[in-house]
Length: 115
Length: 109
Image 1 (tube, one colour):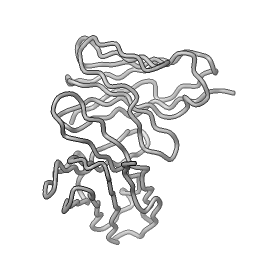
Image 2: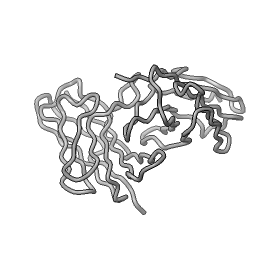
Image 3: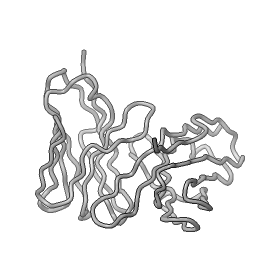
Image 4: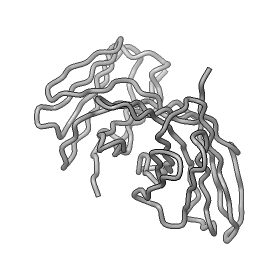
């Protein structure tokens, strides 16, 4: 069955370190998204990609970067982790067929703690 | 940026009761969505609404797309224990989603 996975599921790191969160989907979806979830804010978009070599900044992109070298993967990198980046991170993917909404399928999330 | 106001923030209800929650926006959306998130998991789509005034059901869930395209509500009838979780509304802008802050549903034993 097609799926979307994230790794690691839990990560503790120190301020200033570089951290990379992995996202892998086997749906063959063109669109991939990274969100962070914090209490009282719902999900906020960090970066998104509409296809290989395409990346775009979302609402809260400062301090984060992504690259899309193939269809299946969109790794999220925190260049220099800060305590404000302690959060739960979700990756999602969707198809890009025209017309009505293309459902976003979410991974299980990565809980990141920055000490 | 665009924001969705979702209310209530949390609800404590008895099993069997009906539940109602809503979202409002300062912006018009062409699509409204309702997702549910169980603890330790990512959100899962419950209902998608595509036309102003549209009323759509999914089992015990009913959602409506407001006439002004700036609001939506979700009703859950006869709640059961597995309904607990966080419910999110979202409006679609291009392929992106703008999310409400969520309504946490807790069922009193």
